[in-house]
Amino acid sequence: MPREVRMGIDVGGTHTKAVAIDNATHEIIGESIVKTTHSDKMGVAAGVIACFKDCLSKYDIAPEEVVFIAHSTTQATNALIEGDVAPVGIIGMGKGGLEGMLAKNQTRIPDIDLGSGRFIHCNHTYIPLKQLTREQVEQELEQLTAAGSRVIVASKAFGVDSLDEEDLVREVAQTHGIPVTMASEISKLYGLTRRTRTASINASILPKMLNTANSTEESVRAVGIHVPLMIMRGDGGVMELSEMRKRPVLTMLSGPAASVVGALMYLRAS
Image 1 (tube, helix red, strand yellow):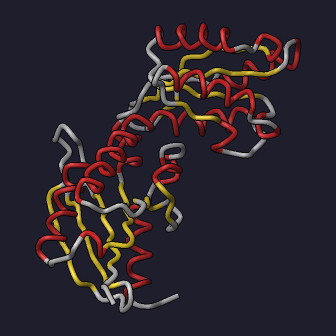
Image 2: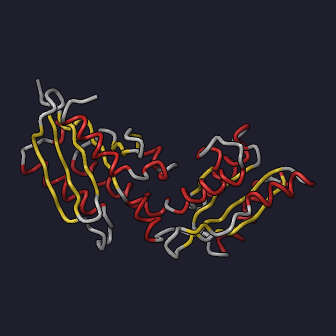
Image 3: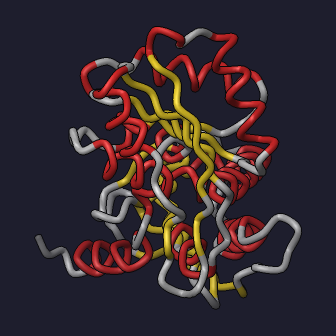
């Protein structure tokens, strides 16, 4: 029976580490450590690839033996700490009249202070639901990108009840290659201001996280491994890359979480 191997890759501030374990016995059968490649044109993905390939070659692990890959990273946390974030354009949506005025104010959040003298810069626009058309969304996107927005947040009052309007913004923005966060996919809370802020934080780290995720996945596939690349969540669980592309904020603190989960698994503790 062929051997099955599970691999974990962790990107830290200084080092990137890979560990391989036997899927049947949970014994460690390979490990590798390289310097984290912050300055490489591929970013930290270059170190992930080098570490991964080194572990395979040093311990004679065939690509077809790998049945699971999990990747944890401090990149989302570091991006917010270091202010390596994209300017956000917020498209608020809701009814007209007094209710619309309230919704417009609640989606018009100020720049988000990251606590280090750096900010997530937010641009704003608002579309009353009666005026919400594909053409109107196109116009608002043009205005927001002209103001410097590199990512978009779609945030509708009571959006958790129906995603249709936020999904329209996502569709239009993606035709222009602009990353989008739908606020009601990020949080199901009814508080519009909190939901918009959370979505804006998520959107601001999308370009950084997507670049690393895409580079890492392409390189893993080039080695001949076609199992899903799983990403560690901050709660110690994992999610597929497709989910991380929508909600990178869930990877916050996944590095420390991975350490705890790994220690428990190694000790065979519940």
